[in-house]
Amino acid sequence: MKLALLMGVIVTFVTSCFTSGYDAKPGVPKKEQ
Image (cartoon, rainbow, N blue to C red; front, side, top):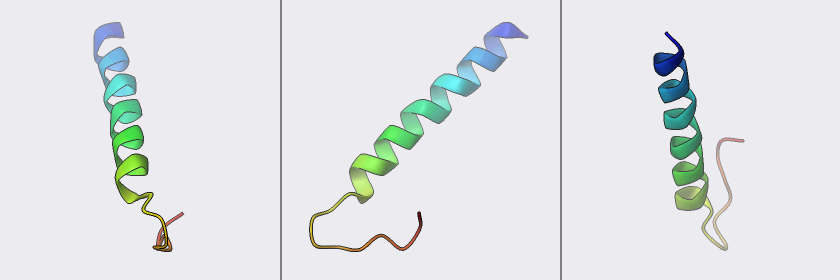
């Protein structure tokens, strides 16, 4: 159970970092925040 929870946290963290870096384009306003 701890492993599943840890994996969920890691996946969420990596996904949020990837999406924030991907969506952060200079000169382009964010639609969702």
